Image (tube, rainbow, N blue to C red; front, side, top):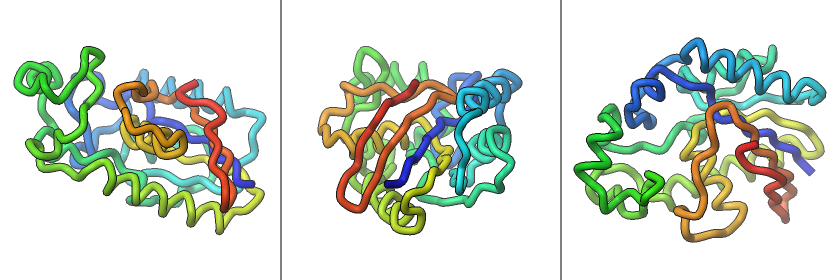
Length: 194
């Protein structure tokens, strides 16, 4: 069984500025984000990682480097969801202009890609399935650290839980922990956004 600890990156400059931050926006961590990453490191102090994987975006790489001294393997399948033309826009502007694509908690609703030009949930989920299958095969009975992004980790959790309604699942907070147990035949979400 492969044990995977997933961490969302710490607060980034775009998070602080309340900007929609997808795969095209690459801002570094804020001071608070660095502190959050170090707090995640403290929570994982008793865990020994056999390998570290991270999204190649700055905020994820910085978080991985603050948590572990192991150089992360950068994997494009872990990048944040591509919000298309919405990337870089103020969240308040998007909520006001496209209220039909956000619920009352500002969770992104399906089919937003028809307006924003981003990928579908199914396209991103297929990449995450590929990533899980590959690392499970490569690291059987090992423990991994995976540093990624809020919406990407939400899609990963939805994949494991096999839920179709993403509104029932909020994005994990910055630098929160999600634990997975994966075998070639089973996928278990132990906890999410802790």
